[in-house]
Image (tube, rainbow, N blue to C red):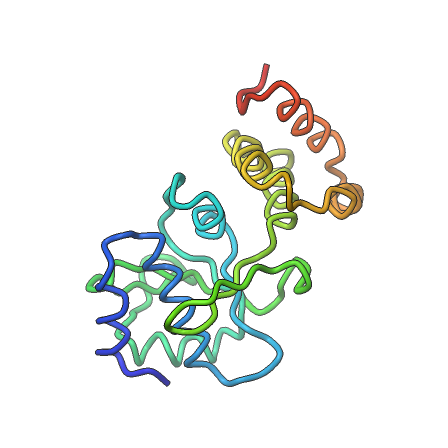
Length: 192
């Protein structure tokens, strides 16, 4: 496991909040047991990474074995915060939400960013789009369809649309996928 002082130096060497999250994920990955499963950054922080920091978020949703993550976070000076799953380190300016090890996405579609500190794994764009459309429909989160739009617009050339369509059918969100496609055709992230 990487020592806290080296983690602190690596993270605080950049002012960019998105880069800090990427570095953290790389350092975390290199500090966990080697195996086929790696910690995956999901949720809003993954969107932040894909949009190069255009959209800023607070905590990082990390999918992995909670017990193994807690061990590393404790060694790195993180403490359980106000939330039931959120761990924070004020010195690093980072908060981590341990969402469990059930990855609701495709490991074949994750993005791995190679850094000087090791690899950082991010949930696939397609799975993020499906999750944002689902929360827009079922949780009535108004900004989530716009986040799906921003992701799709920024990465349209690399999205596997047949996969997104299949996952949308499974999630019962084909109506919201149709809305997203209309938004993309009109070139606007705002619903009309």
